[in-house]
Amino acid sequence: KEILSALEVATERLAVLGSRDLEVSDEILGQLTKDDFPLPTLEYEIQKVWMKHIGLQPNSNETAAQVGFLVVRGLPIQQLSITQAETVFWCLGLYMGVPGAQNNNGDLLGHVKDIGGDPKRDRQFKTSAFIDWHCDAADIVGLMCIQKPLEGGESSLASTVTVYNELVKLGDWETIRTLYEPVLLDTRGSGGVNYVRIPPIRNFQGNLQTFYHKEYFQSAYRHLDAPVEMPYSHSKALSRYNAILGKSKLKISMSLELGDMQFVNNHRMVHSRTEYTDGDTEEAKRHLLRLWITSPATRSTEEVLLKGLSFCQVLFEFVAAKIRSRIY
Image 1 (cartoon, one colour):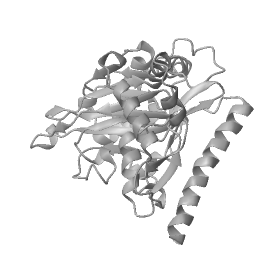
Image 2: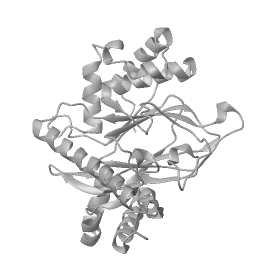
Image 3: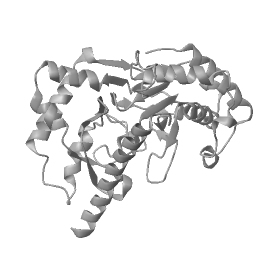
Image 4: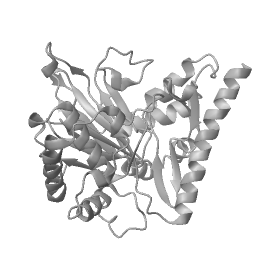
């Protein structure tokens, strides 16, 4: 967990801008660019610190000390309205990359709060239930704490590279091979299909990349057009992977305070959340803002092409799933 001076200064500057003249509606938010939030003297430092700690540019010289996440503190959230806080967070996200849609409605700025969802069927950010280790469907997930719960809601992070290395040390090649195989992933209503096939881990230009969500892998088999049950080899591999993640020495846990912003590399980290309890008043109900960010487009032509092919594979799975649903 790091408090980075360059980002703290940027946050303070953004807070001033937001509190003065950037009251905007959600409809306008997606039209804003970095030019609407001029930070010319800070942009270089923001990018340098970001790439150093998040590490999504293999060709950059700033990847040696990457830790896969960062936490920024110092935003005077109590002095801002919800709309101002949204604007500040959105602006900072624009300096980190390109925010993307998080649901079928195309919402670019998500609200993580308990609205009474079913943790077994709905996307779990709509509930107060425990959320097991997982990645989100973006290069980077960003969270800003607007309001804390009465109790609980602790965030934990772990390195998937470390977990992989643990499997190698144990000589568990069967688990490693199985994790490279596609498994069903429950979309929980996203994309207009019930599930897609995706490998939990893959190799990208010599770098390990992960997309992991055991609960969504397991619940995919509840659908009528899915196989009756998950293959035993996949179930065993996922349980093995989760068991290693459960080791306390491999994770870092934190409670997000008011105004805290957490950014996580989804390719190299997984995160979880403990169950939480809200209070009776709105001021005691947990509320986080969320961004799904695509890393800056400053990579080599080859890498952009490979990433495009990877996207096409995912798109193909959505189309194939829609065709299956029509046939069966």
